[in-house]
Length: 303
Image 1 (cartoon, helix red, strand yellow):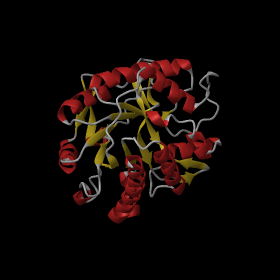
Image 2 (cartoon, one colour):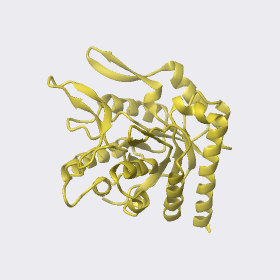
Image 3 (cartoon, helix red, strand yellow):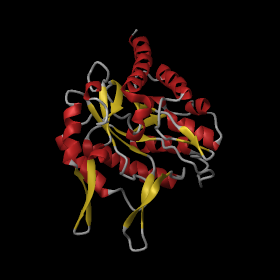
Image 4 (cartoon, one colour):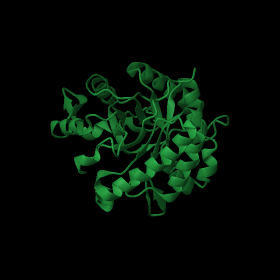
């Protein structure tokens, strides 16, 4: 595939958290907002057909809060790796958003969380699962990624997931999660959303060096970067998004932007239930640290 259209470099972004003061959502602090649309939708079933419909009490407020700032979409329900097909309500939701709430690019996770029951009904797995690094999986996802990029006519990005399963079945010419992502990108022309905290999680849990693994990432095909914090739970390091960015992740961000300054943006992630740990001041501190790193490398690129 030819090199895909790259996202326009925006800067530092953050999720739309209605629990935080609206004053944070200004161009003085943020360059863009990353919307997880499922947060502002609810699932509704009519005549046996499921739909994701806007929750007026939250959707309208989210639109008001983001007014004047560029928006990108980061979905969590597409289940692009489900063998039977993608989650159609997620696609219908994105169809509507592409008309009503224009976005610069759209990203999803390289994983699956929906399977078919014995009766052929879709059921959630409860937690997302990684795909095996095989040619079959790569071809399946690449075909779907290509169709999505054409459907919305904006760059489509796939995020490398955190997972906790060792020894997935693999094809020798792909090998592991890094080889799988590279093959999908080659076949589809989509881009990668490089989640640095997920690389750290998998390195700690599966036994590899995160900085060394970063050398295997096609940074010329990375369109966005995520940074986040996590914590140890019952012997596993979890992608919990439960506080400040881990120091190892900041180090990886420096390495990434030094080698790939044309990335579209860097997003700090934290879940709503953990915002109280940082408070607005702590969130601002994380965003300002990300912006300092971004500006340092973008000044160098401009020079």
